[in-house]
Length: 180
Image (cartoon, rainbow, N blue to C red; front, side, top):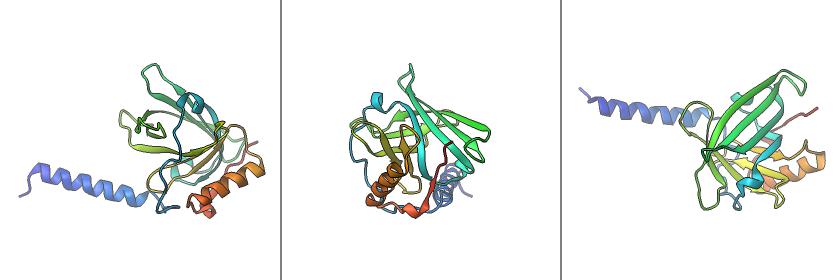
């Protein structure tokens, strides 16, 4: 008979393995490390999603924005907003929190939208020197967001897409976000 600790360890390993497989296809099997450090005060504020790798928690979302602000406890407040079914559809809001996972660059964060556990990775892979755009991903290459400070022009979207492609991302997997 197996000991409870052995069964628990087996269950945890199985859960981690299943979660890794369920995450969807990788658009970049070898994602790079973040290109430069992030000044969180300058990164704070409102961002518009220009494009993303589609995933279940953003299914059917357009008009997507993310707003970041510092909290009194030192964490970062994250408010994601989307419009279901199109840029004028009903609003859906998710509020979470993030903490710095890499103190040296502040380019890697851990996020939580459900309870006290910080399980999601949020890596600022690259950003403009003036913080007018940002490319966000994580270590598996399954997630990618192209962000801008205002709804992107076609030229801005193309420039960001080209930059993501140069970083090794499969840009054919991108879903362009519609804004009104």
